[in-house]
Image 1 (tube, helix red, strand yellow):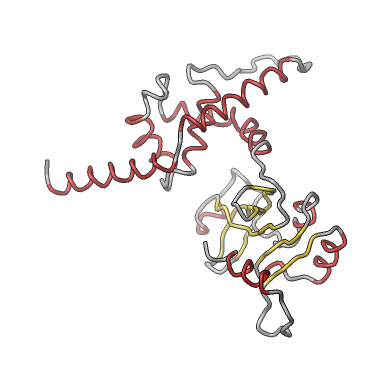
Image 2: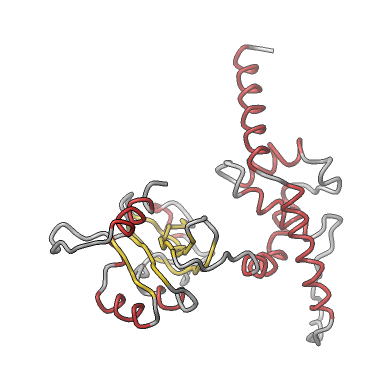
Length: 259
């Protein structure tokens, strides 16, 4: 084994160890599988539409709860692409945990079948409203900006957006969390949607204080949220007049942008 190969193998083992220390596969699978079993029992009681001629059902030796677990684990793995994660980590290292693993191509075919279940599962993972919330948005690119004209998969659903990093073509994910990092609300919009537009829908069940960056400055939005018991606190622009701010609000506002 060459020194370069040894270094690569050592780096791979280090990254795998670091990832496994962050992820508890057993806990993730147990929570996902409990949800899936409950969902399936309720789903079987619902009247279903008659299957269309030639309709294909999802049949695989790998269960949907296992597909969901692997998909969730990818987002905490540190890998840049799912293909690298599945071929370099899951297939060679997780066969004991998932003895019925399928090929990468087959797994990609199974993922759409778990999409609705994943969306429902996220709804059950919401945190507790504590009165202190933080809002922000992040772009989700669907392709490189140079290939935007030829992109067809999400045509009509995505748009151009710009942040401090630059231009992005795709979606924009809006998130609200509490001070413990627990998810309170989320929404996916085209990349060209103003950060302030989805705020009223996202904050219907919130009270207390909501901290955001300068992109959420709006007197109209502030008054609307204040009328429902939610105080919007944002950093002020350089050309705006200074105002008195409570010390605790200033501290929390600063903490919002540290991570």
